[in-house]
Image 1 (tube, one colour):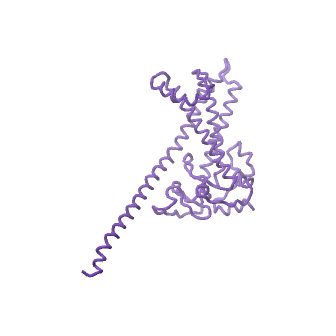
Image 2: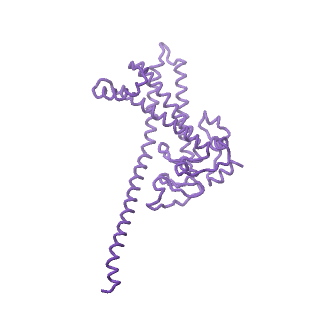
Image 3: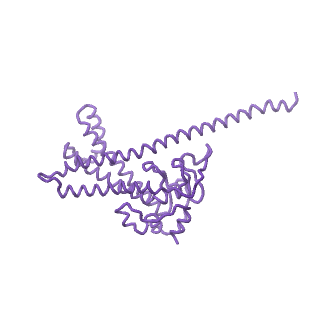
Amino acid sequence: MHPLGVFLLIRLPQEVLHYLHTTELCLMRAHGMIVRMLKLRMLNAIAPAYFYTATAVTFVLHFFLFIPTIFQTQNVTLSPVMLLHITILLFFMLNALGNYSMTVWFPAESANENIIPVCSPDCPDRVDAHYLLNGRHFCKLCKTVILKRDHHCFFTGNCIGNRNMRYFIMFSIYTSCTCLYSLVLGVAYLTVEYAISFENPLTFLTLLPLSTGYFFLGAISGLHFFLIIMLYVWLGIGLVSAGFCCQQILLVARGQTWCQLQKGQLVESRGTWRSNLSDVFGSRWVLGLFLPVQTVETTTGNWHSYHDHKHN
């Protein structure tokens, strides 16, 4: 047989196997990316619903259970103490909801980007966000180009960037305040209504498992068990929100984003930590601490033009 024919008989199967192996890897990567994207889209829909539900439950428990029971005064419908706690709670909740709305109302997307990038299955930035140029990212969940993207917030359903960072930070602050305040009133209600003592520091470690057992044995009511669960929900959300707030303030002061921190990118800040905070919180930052209002003017164009404008 001709030497060329022998070479083809030996070489062809190897090339076919290599092609099949490469195709299989690409299909597996594409399948994994699709599955993970579906999970993230489900989370993007469930998280806001969870936030709205927790907010409604917190509101109902406070105004129809906690405050009337803890601060009730004989022959007085609305005592000064009750009015004070209602004012504090409404202040926290309205600021949390207001800044939540502002975070959604002022998305960090670029209005100048009309072309949606298409990534290959082996893209190193798959699912999360594809890095473009000049501090821009393409978020595959939002399907938009984000200016100075920090991260994608599932509770708001959009990305956090240069235009809505301040509202996200204030949303985290007031969410933490609302949850921790709810935790205090919830503990007070359980103490008054069910005579549960929280003097022992280990109470929070044993309360949930013991209450779960008592509930399935029929020793406590469903409302009693639900209130105990809500204590842990408020504690968890309050601590997580406080942690997010501290992390974001630190990153803003350094002129850095969470995306840059994850990729290990060093950022040259043109100003001090004061100017970096001023870029996000604006000159009327004191007003923004108490009201969910716009305190800084942002542009919808390129991030560099925005940053240069703020430092000129």
